[in-house]
Amino acid sequence: MIETAQTARIEQAFRDAHAERAKAFAGLFSWLFKPRTAPLNQPVLTEPSRCA
Figure 1: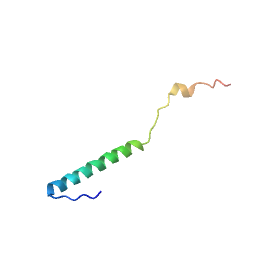
Figure 2: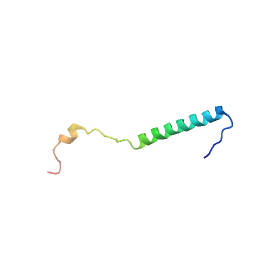
Figure 3: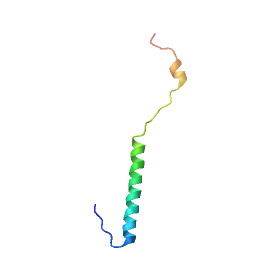
Figure 4: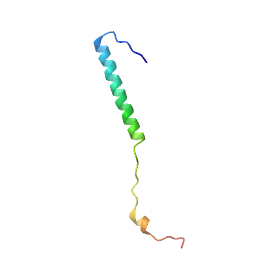
């Protein structure tokens, strides 16, 4: 979208809004694509197999 500002105050408001929007998208994408780890429970890993 192309915005034209009639005053310097409106132009600054557009810049601030674009900066906040960019920050929100960056936060969203970093949250969506961050590596997720699940800690493994040690007692579960050391139990003998029940199939044997």
